[in-house]
Length: 201
Image: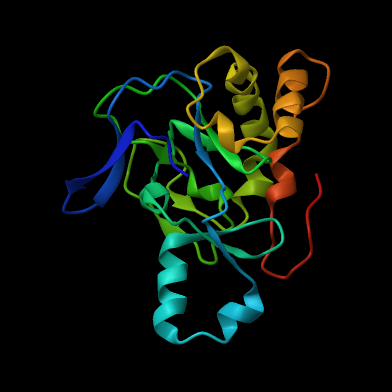
């Protein structure tokens, strides 16, 4: 489920639609949570689908660490890519704001951690990275872990409209990571290689 203080808006002819903040969202806010309405499809299920459905999943889903396709039921599927994304995934089935997000600003993800099937050249942003690759998690996972840790530790300190979707056990773990009592699980554990060999960190 996407953060409630967002809406779908037309961005421009090149990008199409995107998810935009309707209110201030501070760094450390949980911006999306995998919930019970999101659909999960195994590779075997997808293989048996008509091409129409395969094409939809290719555009709107991501692959989790097991290689299953996750299709968000709400506007979460319209979050666009950026090499300077203001949101970032975690190893715990939710995403957070890396920095403060202001009203009218798009919520963006780095598609490099979504286990995409084919590389693609993204819109230029003046960054060294120009292309998103299927193995970007292996290339940048440790760097992304360091980038994520500071905002992750802010999770208990800011208002969390999606708090009710986080289990008590997971919330306790978040508090322990924030307090330095536990290590945050590496994003490398999310990697699903196309050849099926799992990366565990």
